Image 1 (cartoon, rainbow, N blue to C red):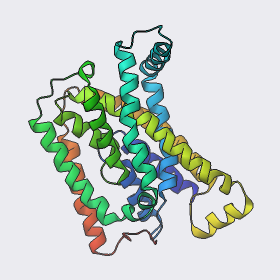
Image 2 (image 1 turned 90 degrees about the vertical axis):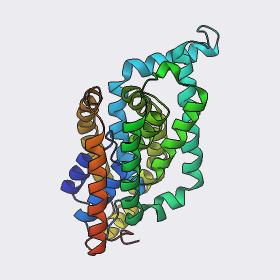
Image 3 (image 1 turned 180 degrees about the vertical axis):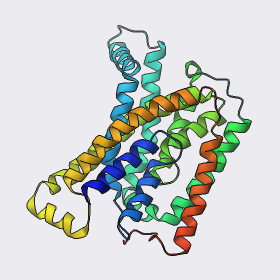
Length: 290
């Protein structure tokens, strides 16, 4: 993977991570278009997501540090367990369990068979339609102060669906939130908070597995021979994803205050149809050379 390709994929990751359009699908497809027959890989995608998730940490820094601080103090009885921030801490933990369990249980399928671009195209279209329906019919009255354990678990399973490229972590979670009656802002805010432990756990897990290999001469040579991302490409893409991602999250949180998700619904459906056309004409390899 060249320096320019790394920059482009970092840009794609940063632009698409917080929008309900599936960053993993975009990195997968653009990576294929840049280097035909070569999937950037689930590990590369998971690691560069650390960049965009660092943007979430900075954007929600006050909220996250307050929640963590109160949650820790509640363990020793210094803050009531009924405190809203303490409850939010527990709900983020509970909501993170599904994606952690399913991610480990189906790691091989997530890294390989589920990256089939036919599946990606279908998920882009299907979950685009679901988002559109939810945004149109849902009452959108509930705020995060009304978040229950049941809702937290349902949010968690919705986030776990994003293990399939094309679903979208934010899109799946926001859709579930809207269907449960939460406002656009509440659903998006919880989606981003819920993603923090999942993305950091996944990215660091993959980094621990992949980076030591890339630090060896044999690992670098093998990656170069296979056309896989080098350590420098991963670092560059992650840095670019962070810078672009922070700008996007600021814009996204502002736009959903007064606008529907219609533009993202249309984009997802069109993107899915275009991807099916590319597959039909043989312009991209559904399995990325696997």
